[in-house]
Image 1 (cartoon, rainbow, N blue to C red):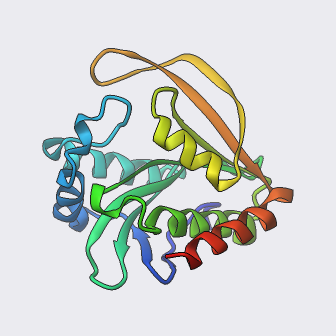
Image 2 (image 1 turned 90 degrees about the horizontal axis):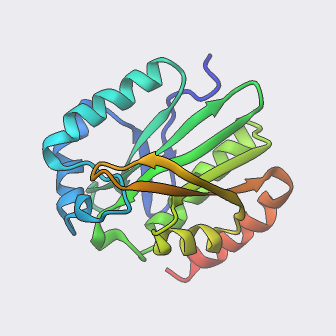
Length: 196
């Protein structure tokens, strides 16, 4: 069995299911809620690119590099976003939670908080990870604040790390949560979820 295998993670608000080609229309609708691809500091796919993005994630999954999830609201079944375990390092028991985005209407609703609780719980409690990374664009201040609110610590900045779709160069901020921090992080995430 692969280190990161297909699994469905279920909470009270959301369900994270393995990404399939059938999720295309729901993901296009979610990305269109706020035209998220227009935000220069994110990598949300444009509607016309969604099929290729899904296929790319599926290829990475087949290679053992990524586990992509479609995020659905449990009450309606509506697709509200996408997230992944990526940069899988089985030898060192590390994963990154990345390529995460949510429809504008799902932001600040508890969807991200519960998604992270489910992913981090799976990483630390089922995969026995020693650390989980989270990365974001230096200019993506909302994402940086959200990652810090999770309890992640900033490890550093990868300067001139990536060339973005529009040709600009991205500095990437790297955060992590280590296994010894997980109980406190889990407790805080559960407290925040109780407010929703």
